[in-house]
Length: 139
Image 1 (cartoon, rainbow, N blue to C red):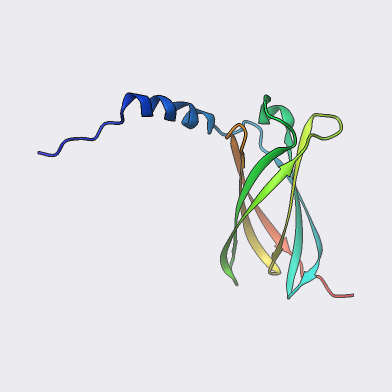
Image 2 (image 1 turned 135 degrees about the horizontal axis):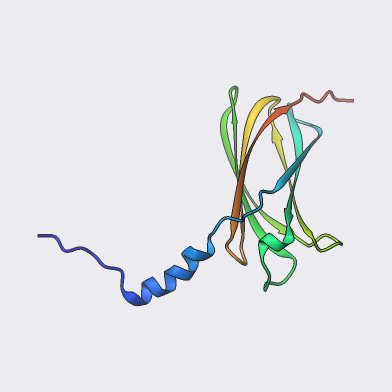
């Protein structure tokens, strides 16, 4: 007869706050995308995520540090993944937080999947957005 392994009480007491802290943020971020040029046959996509600062939480030093994990799915190129460390500071009004990143994507339709985690509070959010990436003509 096999014995079940039990998580010791001390380990469980250490894990519970970490698991509880990983809750999703209530507000969904806004995503603004611009197309800034072409590099090696791909279009440079500049993305800005805007999130209400109140959703991130307080008690940590600014600027805040985040990790962005992304995945892009295209019919032509398949799936590609990326991971960027990001820093964000409060807007001058103190009401929003801006997170910016760039990625070169092949022209055409794609699905952009993004997950962002606040390294201070361990809160996270995710979003999915369909994009039609244009082919930018070289000047």
